[in-house]
Image (cartoon, rainbow, N blue to C red):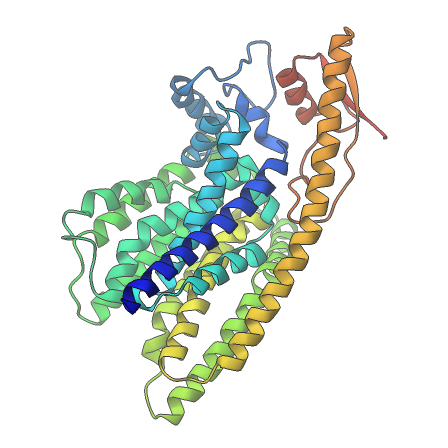
Amino acid sequence: MEESDKKIRNIMCYALICLIAFSVMLLLNQQTVYTADDYMYHFFWEGSRPGSTTRLLQGIADIPASLWNHYQGFNGRVVSHGIVMFFMLFDKMVFNVCNSLMYVVMGWLLLFYIEAEKKKRRPWHLGVIYLAMWTFFPHFGWSVLWVSGSCNYLWMNGLLLLFFFPYHRRMSAGETFGHPLLICLPVMILGFLAGASSENGGGAIVLLAMLFVGHWLWKREKIPAFAVPGILFAAAGMAILLFAPSSRSRMVSEPFQIAVYLKRIREVIGFSYHYILPLLVVLLVEVFFWIRHKKRRKEPWIPCLLVPFYYCLSGAASVVVLLASPIISGKSWIFAVSFLLIAVGQIALWMEEDGCKIQKGKRLFLGLLIVLSVIKFVFAWTDIHRTYSEVQNQLCLIEEQKAQGITEVEVPLLTPTENTYNVIRHSPNVSKDPEDWFNQWMALYYGVDSIKGVEP
């Protein structure tokens, strides 16, 4: 009876933690406004500027042709932008709910990766993961809350982990879900989609799968039937992404310039300092105490760190490859952060199970994480709510001027922000120039001739 009561309590705790995470994300999503590319993806894709024939997407049947035009003229991310276009067919509340659910699902995926055995999982483990996602996911406003950004980063991050889970399961628990041949087809389909998900994320997951297969070859273990086909299909998806006509035209048009690559190196180092360094410090501290613990017991320590090392190496690769990108943005670090979170969590649980005394360090880390999360939330909510109120004022003014027959409307500019949880930080928004591309798309969406930003 006690075991049954414990199971019920755990289920209730899991449900409560998921409900809290979902509610917080839903609240933030409801206060997050459309910005940057969002207005543009409401329309059938014909180009990055509206034209005389530009029209709104009419339904799901419009999406394939719109994606084809996008693939030819903008970039090859058909998977993520297909999801963006799908959500643009509905009221934003549909995205808000689905995106909040995706955040909850992402926490569970990371939990499954960190703790392979179900009986060893605890509800508080999941709570810590949600706090860590909130604290460490890069440029949270762009990578999690922004419609276009979340579909490209949070959702694609989930797709990568979903595809790779059979590999992880085989490595950590020595088993897969059902017969390897039966899951071969789903793995190939997911692999193709994962490879085509993003330039750095798709490449990182292919590398990680190759490292796992190499590990099994080195250990002379049987390679599961899905492993190699999954890699091949992921590589095929990545090739379709990278060799899109739009991508190739940009690569050809960009001559090699040392100054440009030095600038990219500085940007990669800078973003890595902000988004990876804290987790990297935690990881190095764990590794130090793990090695010391193993040496005291005269036990080998290298084999235990191989799998976390594979995740770290793949995460590093997802960062280094950005040196080839003409535009480097902090949201692209979400894949590296996720892989680092997996490595940190795996080592921490292994240390605890192996009798390594980490209680003080664990309590210190959790305390700092909770305090940091609360502080970040207070500042984020205040900033996001202010922007939401200002945008609602803009929309009211647009409707008022339309009602008066004014088609060249003026709205106050938004207050600038440096809060990374606010989606408008450094993102295109209403500017003083009516000919600015964002102003043009917003004007078309709201049915006016032009929109001009003025000082409030």
